[in-house]
Each structure stands twice: as structure tokens, then as C-alpha cells.
Length: 243
Image 1 (tube, helix red, strand yellow):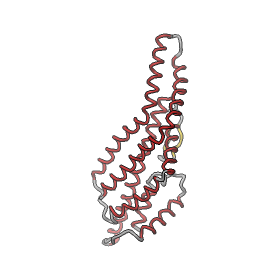
Image 2 (image 1 turned 135 degrees about the vertical axis):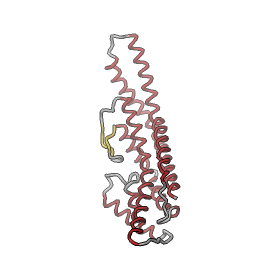
Image 3 (image 1 turned 180 degrees about the horizontal axis):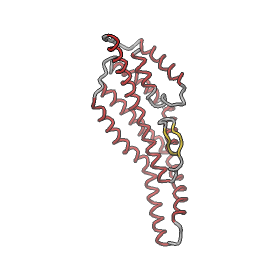
Image 4 (image 1 turned 30 degrees about the vertical axis):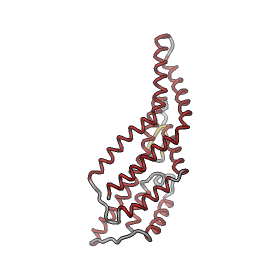
């Protein structure tokens, strides 16, 4: 039961596994079969006093699975932030779509990066790393031995710092292109004040933005590398904070 609780909490909080597109029966079935496999190899025995003690162990294992899955999943929010900034610069910020990962309304570019990075994750078998990571947690964090420390907020503060740094790294080409476009429009406004720069700039920014996004397709593996490195780092830090 304790193994099942940790695995199920992780599945419902981890990237890809927690998607709404994944059927509930698949999540439950995967958790059950994975639990049956781990039950044969997870060492140690659990001691508790009465129903209250067992309930405390259930809550402890639930928190372990949720914390590890959550810190693995929040790395994808960097793509939402970067895509929103890009669309604000290009002029697509008024168009919103539903994001199946974060379950919120996001912009077009955010959804594009979310899907493409998720696809790269599946192609490179990073989801296998997540499964192996949660299996290894039973060696590092035995059943009933988790320590939910109050200083976990420090891990979140570190992520917020990386959130902005990695996000602006992804957005940098769009920033550079829009800076050049705005400089050209400012010069044209002084040279030919009779031209309506608002109408010209709106169309020009969309064209330049789409062209830069086309050129940035080749940088997608680098973007996914940023996200995956941050995900692995956050998983390791979360496990270390719980031991």
C-alpha cells in the first residue's frame, strides 16, 4: 500500500504521466503493475503503531511522491513563460490556447514548445529516466523514513532563479530581432513622419518574428537540453532534501 501511494502520487504529478490526455485507467494500471514489480525488490520493513501511525505513513509517502513529481514537472513551466514573452514581442499574445501540461490558457508559441519538447522527451526515452528515478527513491528514501523538512522553500527559490535565467535564454533571439526592428521603425518615423509606423510595425514584427521562429527550429534540441537538465537537477535536489 505504501509503495502504491508513492508511485500513484508521482504518476499524477510527474511530466507526461500527469497529462489529461493520458486515460485514468492507464495511470492506475501503470501504478499497480509498477508497484507489483517494486514490491519484490524494495528492502526493509515498516513499523507503525495503530491506525494513526499507518495513516501518518500514508501521508508521508503521498508527500514524497507529490514533491518529486512536482519538482520534475515545474521545469516545463519555463517553456510557458518563454513562449508568452515571445508572443508578446511578436504580437500573438491576444491568441490563447489550452495547455494540456499546465491545464491553463497559454499562447501559441508556448504550446508549440511544450509539444515539441514533450515529443523530444519521449523520443530520447527521458520518461524511462523518470521511472528509474522514482524506483531508486526507495533505496535513498526507505518506506516511512522520509523527512519533510521546512526548508524545501529554498529549493523553490532556486528554481525561480533558474526559471527566469533559462526563460530569457530561450527568448533572447526574439528579443534581439525585435530590438533591431524597433530601432529601424524609430529611424523611419523620424525620416518619414507621414507614414503610419503602427500599421507598418505590426505587420513587420509578425513577419520578422515568424522568420526568427523558423530559424530557431534548429535550436530546439538546445532548448530541450535546458529543460531536461533543469528537470534532472530538480529531481536530484528534491530527493536529497527528503533524505
